[in-house]
Image (spheres, helix red, strand yellow):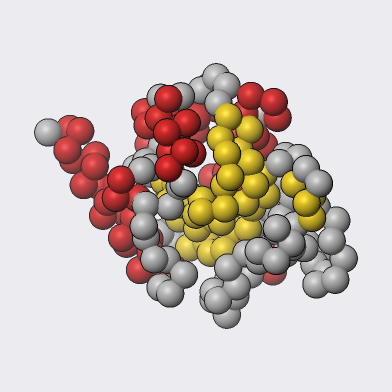
Length: 194
């Protein structure tokens, strides 16, 4: 796990620790000191801790004018034991929402498991962003994670699975990824309305 770095090819475009509007502004990182752990496994020191003991993030790109954020996740998303959605919503999403972000894309290849609890935070978050014309999308979820999300009926609040998987995002620029996800979400919402 300690070898898995957050995506770094967009650092010439955006660095969250240098963005005064970012919830991670002012963070300092080490390339050598490993402090964060997922159970007994150390994580690369570039991942950001935000209150969860099993889920970590990296805010890769934010475009305030268009109101979107691209965020990479790693670990176990465990609402049942650790209420990870509360930490994700309160510590990252709410801070960005107050800065005008209402469209969230999460890269989830490194989410190893998902364990559901109640859906209150998801419902609250989805309602907030939809009022602003926004959305929440989970990209490239593993099949078993997708099944767990579906069993928890989170498709009411999040866009995931199907077309949202298999996106080759690492070789693209952030605006291209945003446009792709925005088109997919708008297409899905159009099908639901029709």
